[in-house]
Length: 399
Image (cartoon, rainbow, N blue to C red):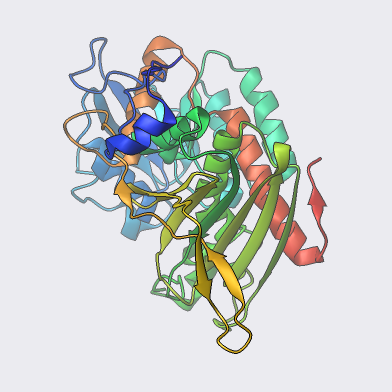
């Protein structure tokens, strides 16, 4: 599945200073160059911030074309650079699914509509790129796995785009090869300093625009933000979590919202691996990060790169109490070294672009997406368990 330089040892890896890992052939398509077997024609269902952003990305990708879009809000359906006049427009996604010119759809709707729209698209014979979190409930996640199995000719890819960013493949390989020692701990955060609200032109549209604030439509911070990191944890651990305990609340933004403005979860994975996952809306220090804590070093994953901190295992005696003369062993931390990784192509694209290119490649070749309905199910259930733990005050076991 992958190609590595097996002659590298952890010692030479550290001493080399570059922390460069070998290129991987992980089933990702060859991104450079145009598509050889025609153009993949896509429709986007949901033209809000995410749908509009995806439309802009599609304009830059070879062998892909946006031919239709759908939204119930005219302000989001209007002609724009993302969706020019030639793109057909619908206000009912079932009409878009009837459009025979559409090969596949990108579903960027509010979370509670994911299951319904994905099911309808599969039944209409369309390939589906479904934004995360895959579904709104655990039962829907299980049902969608079963429904997808009944449509083996269609691709169902879940929008966990960081699985397609080579940075994470490099980090995963560093863990697998033991270059930072034995990894038993992770610390993940997705922090912001804002109310996370969007302007509402009409008070009657509050729940439609700010659906992330209401439990009937969204799982809030865990499903909208932390789901990315939990999906990476599942991948790195090679398993779903065994249990989770979480606390959360609405403690600052007391504005009528129902989903938390802060949550902290502790996941337990097989082999004694544990991960802290937090999301808050009151402080943006270090924003997005994943810290991989190994016995020989730490990798801190940031938005577009990563730093490696080797452990300094030189023991020193230092006075910590001038009265008693007590001493303590001080373990210093090594200076950070950038982790070098190769991009998929010279364009240095957004991770979503690589995910969409792989979606088109899966349609063309019939291969299974790396982010698929099974991995999407496990990530969805994991973040839902954290919400349930925070709501009940009890540890939640994987069912």
